[in-house]
Image (cartoon, rainbow over all chains, first blue to last red; front, side, top):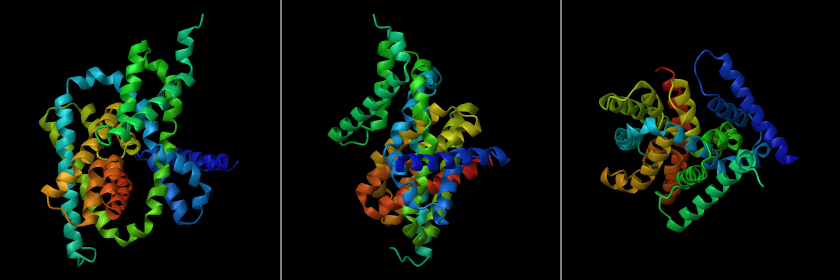
Length: 119
Length: 228
């Protein structure tokens, strides 16, 4: 029953996320709302880590598995993507480097301004 | 005689081949020990090969595939535990985490947007690429909200993650990043969970900060995407 209860807790939070996503006027992914709800519930002590531990570990440890169908569905869009494959790869590569540099340098700068306790 | 079409149409068929492909992907990854041999990438290619080989349309695969996809939202929610378990280190570095994640998220989206304009890509493809630096479930949610194609986003996210994981050590050297907090946040911001597994190999603090960046960058990207 332990796992069953944990599944109920996690699924209920997901349901709550979907309900809130419908109510709020802006486009906000319901799964991310569920993440925020669960984090808030943990921080406020409404849910204790034991209430969700095994179920959450199962989800986190096998996270990549759940993307297989989404990844496989690329065959449905293959022709669409084929025409733009070179820019597609270049955009992924260039923006990855730019994001790395921007984040690394801004964090280094901020930590230096803060007195570099962690340097 | 066995009716093969009925066998292929069973949800158990899709789920079994998906799990088998994923296990094989992990075995290959452990043998090769290179980030290029990403287990998810191998699993996706294996499933596509099986479907093409047996002439099974994607619609039929979905009979079981939809069951697997159902777990995407709970898996995203479970990311809360990753953040929660690092709450002490997060609090200790709260300002660098917020500044780094905010700048990383904005720079990533602006950079993708400008490059899409430069390459003259249409609005749908641009929307699919915009959230590509954040973790897959969050990126898929943003992509769908913006009118993008979720599978294209998944492809971009996985590819970016692999690139970040492969090039992280080289980028650290070239751009002379010495601070472990900066290294971790930068890897997490540019290549989410796939990069984080590499950051963990570099160091414990690097790995923890990279893990924190997955959640915080994801959240910030969602917030910034609302203004698009």
